[in-house]
Length: 132
Image (cartoon, rainbow, N blue to C red):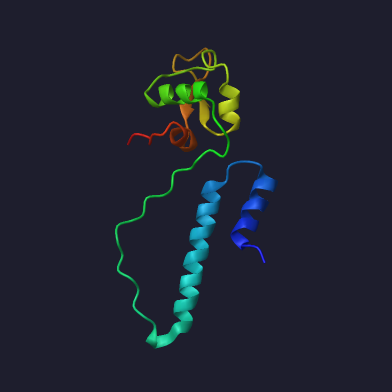
């Protein structure tokens, strides 16, 4: 029998056709919490104590599941450095947007091409973490 987690990942990837790492992580976390609660509820009075809570775990940064060309990585790194690239300056902005690496925001000048902003997946692809 195959691993249910692999089956769930295959279903989500097949039917949603988009990166779903956040949904997968949330489902895995909820399933683990439910299993722990279920086991503890049935263990009775002789259940071992819960482990001491350590520092909170850092959530795993999403990773792109597709290759990114060196020139595209350079654009992502420039955006991470604070460059306000626009759809007029970045020829492959649709590629970035379709892969959920960037979002488009209205031009701060009020008119003109939209500006690109990195998403969490875009920050991860650039090898950085968002400020703040």
